[in-house]
Image (cartoon, helix red, strand yellow):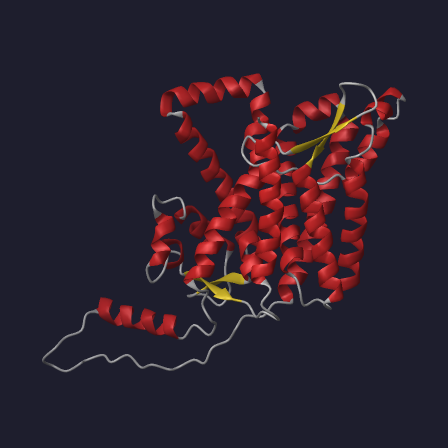
Length: 359
């Protein structure tokens, strides 16, 4: 499996990056548009940061003409390439960047697939074969990334801790009666103490929240703001904004994006992109196997106002109310800070370029 993952990712990266530098105008002029559709099989996914469409403008021979290259997509492809090489060279030990890129790919392709199906009726009427072709592309990459993520997760073990059996002291003499609620609370406390894996630290939980929020914006910005190119969509949003406020509309979009983000990551793989970097995972505290329905509840609990601050207590609300928690995975070596620093430098450079283009 190691060789298959490495070969596929390297081929994808080596074919994906050059596509952005092709002269598509020349291809169209020579009536070879079919080449564009063939090459789009290896076309990378698009990321933006809110309204900053981070693009590089390369001047062409013709004066005043430029080729637009999405910088964020190239950065993603570079991360995928570096992650796959580290994964192979370390003999499957270093998986942080590869799992992050694969999960990014899976979420982004899933959202693209949903939008493709949403407009499938009109698309098939106009371009039946091309619509089916692009549906096949999305399904193909979703299947491959799903299999890869499942395998990469299987390589990670949780950190066990010594279980101390604590017998709750329940007073049952005739002079003092104990309520059923007190017995239940003692039982739950015992179950929590006996959790056989090391819980994630408060620092890791806070870092997960910050990184996942940033990743949500990166993945969903092209769709949230790309839809604004539709006049009908703009009119609807402007009308909604005039009624409830533009800021409320934006918060609503981010809330919906977070639901899809966590359902596609934690709901299926029990990890999120941020958790691949901190090497933590969601598990159940009341069931032997974590169910999807439990993770659906955990996801929607996150929408409670000020819920993000609840994890500064003993347990966050989305943990406590869904009977879940986040635990640590075994780390071969402490490379978390280097991985995050690597990503931070890349994305900050990207953001600076995007802001610079606005002025």
